[in-house]
Length: 194
Image 1 (cartoon, rainbow, N blue to C red):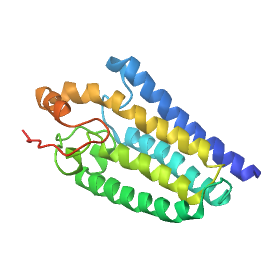
Image 2: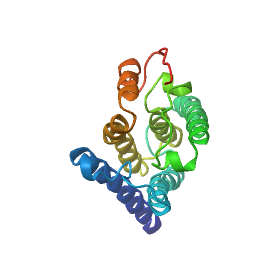
Image 3: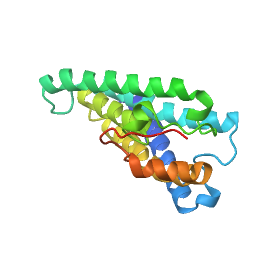
Image 4: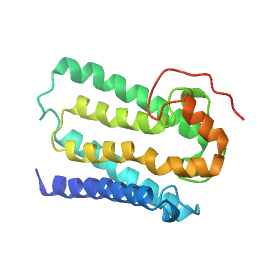
């Protein structure tokens, strides 16, 4: 790897590790949680997006620079990779647009239980995981793998930091919802918004 790739790798790993640390802190100490923020502000929102960009931009850069270095079949790379990327981007951006920038960044808002939220309590996280996996499959880049793994780990931990806050904020409506819809992915269920 070149010096630039090493710097990009460090940025991506620092972003992923930072997110994991914030999430673990929030799980262990919910009364002093960092995610979701106890008080929403623009600078906290900017930090969330900076960390997210650190992971995704690093993964993109390292994916391109390490293109084809992992032993993945070209058939798999150029079929499954693009499918995962397209579908996951459609899911993430559709839900982010529905929520709005502030709520996607941790601001309180309305409890959403329709659309993709019939299949998963955290469809944006599920789609982001699929996006990172799709990028690895497409690029077959070994240099990108550590950053992608850190990103996937953070995304899989995030619901455990977020759900106590959701239960506190939305009470019985959210508790009922958790009994009807799986955390990550499952069959559609009839969910009634309250």
